[in-house]
Image (cartoon, rainbow, N blue to C red; front, side, top):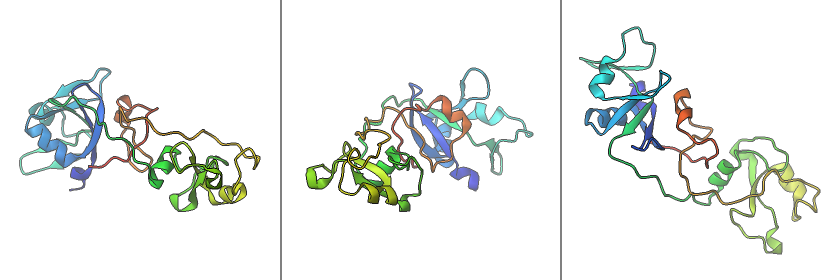
Length: 201
């Protein structure tokens, strides 16, 4: 069932976003009593256990559903873990992919957005001058800008860099990247200024 593969936002018991999981996994957590559904339809949020969630919607509700022999149940958008209050402490790895994510797949010189296949990693201070291959000296650039800059600094090439590159902070919250289809209800729980990380089930 397609609905069972839908993404569900997972909050710890402090109401902080910590992960995404599949609807299939969410239903298991709900049924076992390890999580509750966060209802985001009203002005105030409230939580529902598995039985309450099953009984909470009428048949005319247009939300995505999963049907079994005995149940016709809505797919939750957000769940709250009942016993988990930690935050992910994993540091973002320095990789080509994550540099592109940090810079939002946008060339830091011409400000245009590109597919990964049309992007390069640029040493702001050229390697020939001791510029390190690190978060603080690598910027995303398109091929034309990378070629134009060459082995010069941005100032020498008369090019302005959008943002000074820096190492992303340890992630206190999750932020959905550009490839993940986000539900509107998630925006209440996601920090718009946090480092973008790839989320997976």
